Length: 255
Length: 255
Image 1 (tube, rainbow over the protein chains, first blue to last red):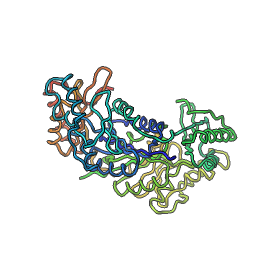
Image 2: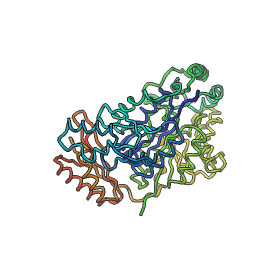
Image 3: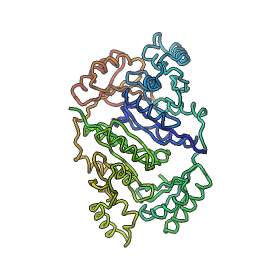
Image 4: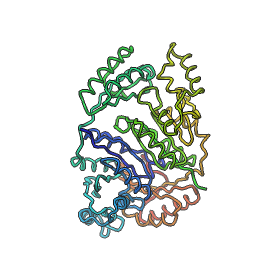
């Protein structure tokens, strides 16, 4: 059984200018691995209509799932929703359920007239959109086809992702085992590691040097959907590192 | 005068699996803004040959500069350099200057035989590559055409970027001004902001809500290459927020 694949599209000038540190990729990557929909690519693109439409149409054809973050608020630079409609070639129109939700929210919690034109944009969606609940700040995300549109604010994005997660059908979860050894240099173990990768071609074996004030080392990660093979490879890595004279330990190096 | 554009390609399974938090995008985005080569897109892609070659050939045709991070170490999963050679259709071969550098380094600092086949891969480059100095750990990055190949470890990447920076010819630097106001909701100011964006179409006006334990607000950023227009727009934003009853302050909200 092969796993469905995912692509993340991060929409926002503020990430590309360096103003804002990207803070959603790691969460989504980790959760998708657990669900068994490995993230195969991520893109950061600007709040530019042609860039959003072009990117969405490219990646929704290429991957089983596309997740977007950012650009679904009420201001002029929030253009994700209307661009998704254009990408799918469907009208961008009031979504009855989202409209009712926001109309009630503003009536109950804000002065009269608060559900203004700007806020009505948050209830305007591509025709056929299925809402993704927002338990933090009401205004919902949505799915259309294989594209899932989430907020950019991490706390809201995470709540939306968890609301959506039960609807995502993944393959087997990605199992992973890590072994690290202090004082080791990658160049010394590279050939032996390549041999181990060759013995378990169905796994990804990654080698990651680390640097700590007290000295560095290398962490080796074995990853794949077959947990037994992952465990076998991790044993072989441990034995190999020991044969190199290192003292391998399970898990990531302490931070 | 228009600015040259840049794309960043982050190469590494460890970022896509969630194991490693991406830590180079913000540095590169900020520095490129200062140099006047705005970052227009970033992609995170896996250590897969076809993905690297395909992405590099797509983005080097689309942007003036391409920066890559990751995948230039000595292990089997470090395949960036050979993939760049394949993307450019040139041989991947020992680079005389890099080879001499590394041969000397290992002879002086390591036991005999340390400059092994794995480490020799770090001195093997696309024909025509121009070295980017690595003052941290010797093994150099390189430029070929408009593609600049940097390490993935942040400390090494930053040192390489600064070694390369004097060779990059940018346009006017991107000027930016930020105004923030506590207790403001985006939905209240959205229409007025859209009017300000319309008055300064040559600028990017971005609206970013923030959340703090003591309460939130909105930060408004005006950005563009004409510092005078940026200052004008920032004044207009301040006046508008004041008219909305808020108490705008210059700069980002305190963390």
